Amino acid sequence: MRDAEPVEVAIAPPRAATSDPLLVPAARPSASTAEDADSKVGVPECDAYIATLERCLTKFPEAAAAAAESTRIMRAAWKDAAKDPTARETLTTACKAAHEAILAGCNP
Image (cartoon, rainbow, N blue to C red; front, side, top):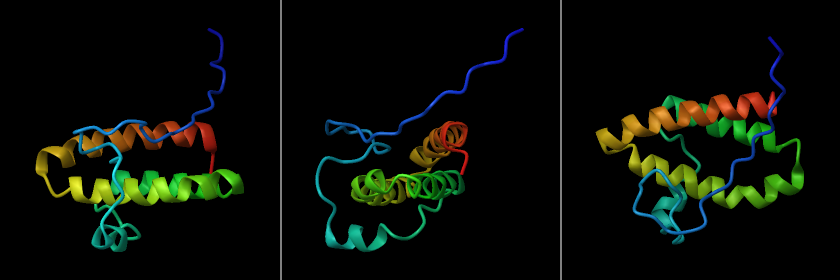
């Protein structure tokens, strides 16, 4: 059996607005959402993913600067979505998969 080749993973925010609470909203966050954006999501798998993403981006300063706003908005949207038990379950699964993918590509 042949060893698998390493895979590079790129995470990008969605391009269009959606009703899915797990995706980044197209609209700018309100002031209260912006204040909450720097705190943890409250879902350990999502907090781990975001921490790894931010550590990984420090290796690429230009990308880090470009991703800072979308990461902040994503964190705020996920924190809001985590208030709903059904969305929280979906967040847990999605963030775990995203975290595993970014670990494979980034090796923080």
